[in-house]
Image (cartoon, rainbow, N blue to C red; front, top):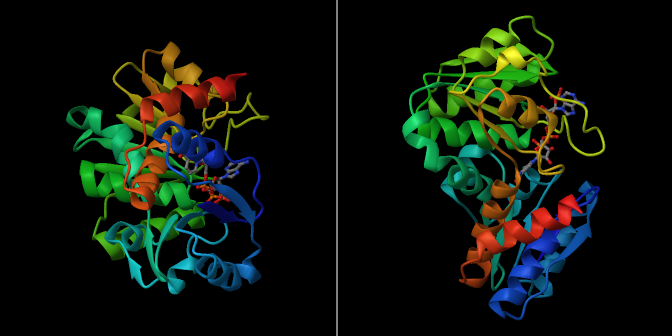
Length: 279
Ligand code: NAP
C-alpha cells in the first residue's frame, strides 16, 4: 500500500497503517511516494504493474485521479474527489473515506446536531468532504462557509446547490465583521483550514471568547498539535471540542478495511498516534 501526492510533507498515514498491519499481523507495508502532477498516469500504471493492492491519494491528485478509475463510489462522486484506490487485479475503484472519517467522528452527536445551523471554515478538499457529509447525514438548517478567498466559498455553494439541491449556504470572508455572530449562532463549528497547525500554533480562525458557548461542538481537522488554539479557546467557554486525530484514523480505518478485509483497532491507533504527535 502507499500514498501518492506532491509534495509529500509530513504524513502520519505510514505510521497509522504500518502499526495497524503489525497489530493485526497482516503482511503488508505502506510507503509514501512523491508524485508530481505530470507523473500521475505513469505512477498509477506502475502501481498496477507492481500488483500494489491499494493506495491513498492526496493533493494535487484527488480530482484528476478520478478519470483513471474503473469505478467510483457514490461518496467519491458526491464529494468530487477520490482519496483511496483499491486495485483488484488491474481494475481500479476510487473511494472517498474522508466522508466515513467525518461521519464516524460526528455521528455520536447526531441527535444534538441534526437540523441545526453549522459553520465550516475553509473551502478546499476537506471542507468539501465535511459539507457533503453534513448535508447528507445531518440535514442542517443552514451551513455558513467562511474562507479567505470568498469566490472559492461561492464555488462550493454552487457545487452543493447543483449536486445535492441544498440551497441553505451562506458565504463569508475570513475577516468579515459578521463572524462572531455567525459563530455564536452555530451549533457545530468545523475548522477545515490549516490555521493553527504546527508550527503556527498561536493562530486561530477566530480567537474571541465570545464566539463560543457551551451548546457548541467545535471540530478542528488539524491534528498537530492535538489541542489547537481554537480548541483551547472554545473549551474554556464550555464547548465540546474534537481534534482531527479521530477523523484521520477513522478515514484510514475504512481504507484499511477496503484493502485487507480486516478491521483496524482504531482506539489503539489513536492512542499511539497522539503519543507520537505530542512527544
Ligand atoms: P486545501 O484543499 O489546500 O484547502 C485549504 C483551505 O484552507 C482553503 O480554503 C484555504 O483558503 C484555507 N487556507 C489555507 N491557508 C490559509 C491561511 N494561511 N489563512 C487562511 N486560510 C487558509 O486543504 P485541505 O485538504 O482541505 O486541508 C485543510 C486542513 O485540514 C489541513 O490542515 C489538513 O491537514 C487538514 N485535514 C485533516 C484531515 C483529518 O483527517 N483530520 C483530513 C484532511 C485534511 P483559500 O481558498 O483562500 O486558499
